[in-house]
Length: 105
Image 1 (cartoon, rainbow, N blue to C red):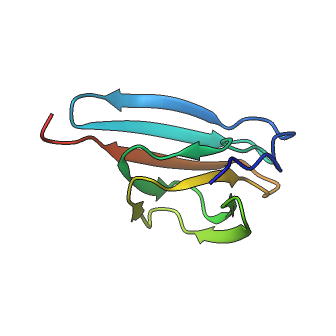
Image 2: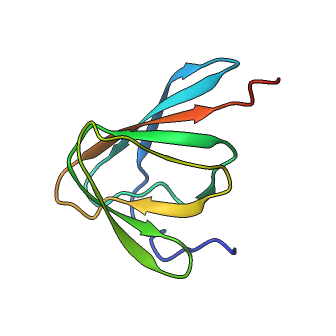
């Protein structure tokens, strides 16, 4: 799918890698109000643990979906997901992303 640019005028979310080893990468994502990740494709399976309760927008390239999240309630996705994640809330939103590397490497 071609990258979507509809939210490119927004500020970038802040990614801070907390752990990066041969098994996983753990990243804290901080989204100031109005910010976004930018279009990306996930190269690994991953789990997201919201630290904030609220709603994020997900730009799939063909649609913009609302994704309600509750602090502490994790969800997982498989590699290959392509999207832009947008904080349309009037407050900062934070989640932890855990990417699982191939254990056969």
